[in-house]
Image (tube, rainbow, N blue to C red; front, top):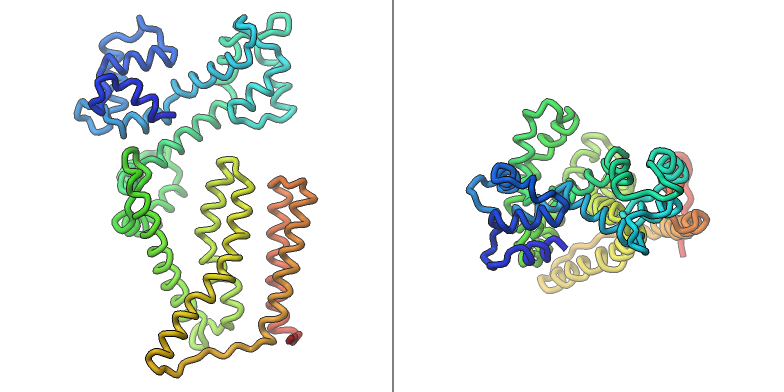
Length: 375
């Protein structure tokens, strides 16, 4: 754990890393001690000290260490040593797949075949130097570096991310698409950065409760304004889209964005089951808590103030969509089962097909024919 590494290095417990402690870390990560001259240490220290004040703080160290190539190489060596059971400095070529999987990759048969052809071997054995040279030229290394950089960026505060993003606008290598989305989302980033306490930077974990509460508040406010905007745009004076259709499309998609983002985050971390259960649980929560609880409070408020306000629901409009929803849930579970409970591209495409089939039937039922059902 990166925090344990910092605590172990910070021998005087002053919350900072001095030059000697930094040298000790770099030697541990595999840098030759004779290469760590005063000038070399100064260059390393400047790379970590983003504030430029000559002090390496815990926050700066955690972000640098998370993204550093030295850490990745050190973890690669530790994984290699685990498979080198007899401590001979070599492993069998048949263990390449297990080694890559132990480092968090998912190599296919073609990747293993290419590795066996490319890595220099002696009587079916390969040493760490040859494996390391191949690995650092492979896509696996780029994948690991990209993941480390993303992990480091995720520990920046929102406001720090805004500043670094603004500095990147002048980078000619930054894609125009990334620049556009940065500028497009800048007002939202500033709003959320000012209103929501950020618990991601190292040492700010104690803000997690405030982050949780204010995130719910901001999601609620965003949803309210989105719904009001959709109602205004789709009313009879503008686009004249029925509320049932706008509810099943625009509003349903907009209010599901938090579910989408959370599912993507946990799925990319290897928790596909959490991604699926999050979406299913969210819909169950919407139906059993999100709809009835606000209405209960609203009815109690109206009764307490002798208000005569009600919303009439046509049960014939609810029975068929509810039955279709239950059928869709059963079909989705069946589709996941036949995919052997694995999130594949084919399963993702099936999900899109199921959604558009459901949407197409709902719209056709509204405009082309009418199936009225009641219990």
